Image (cartoon, rainbow, N blue to C red; front, side, top):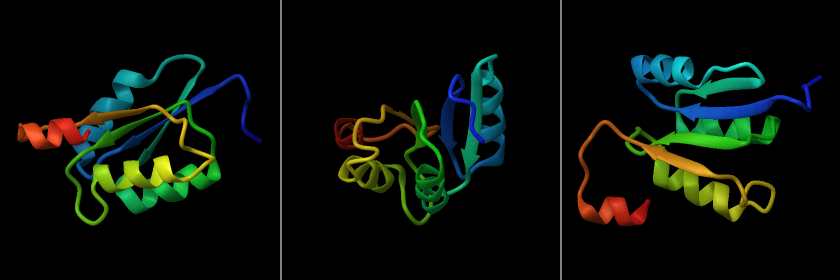
Length: 99
């Protein structure tokens, strides 16, 4: 049974090294960090647990970060959820505005 005093953070990235780095950075007492390696896995995790925030990689195969964010915003159960976009790639201004 989930602990209601815990803040759950979902980290989504298809690069294992980035996941490890982000999990390590975010892991603190009172916080549980859950990782997903794809957009599809992230959406499955969002159905299983309520999260305080999603840290979302923009560039992933399959469902990219923007597509996942659209799904999050279109679902009334998750539409309020804060999303932090991250990327290791310098993107065009259009991608920055889209985020």
